[in-house]
Length: 103
Image (cartoon, rainbow, N blue to C red; front, side, top):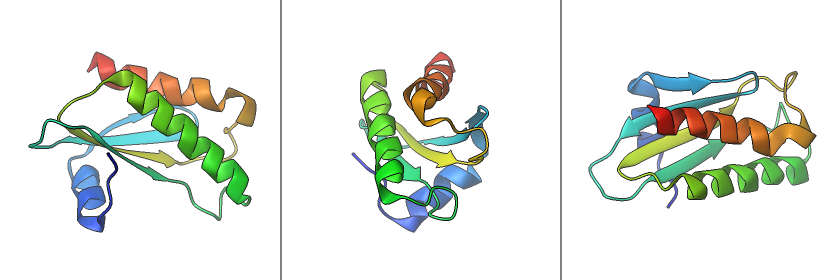
């Protein structure tokens, strides 16, 4: 499932629980349901081409699906495009989600 409303995104930001790596920040918060939800935010200002933004989103959804999380809302944000490498995109996203699973 996906996070749709701005209130859901805001709730993840307010919780102040986050995990970082060189290119991505992952904000998360507990929810009351049995399902986990994902929101991805990639600014057009940072990644110009829609094709590249969609590749990141697809990689994030796949990594999220493989984690089998329950009862959590997650927002993935591309924070620093200087350290973003398209060839290592999937591994960088997997690192962040693996850190989340350890917590």
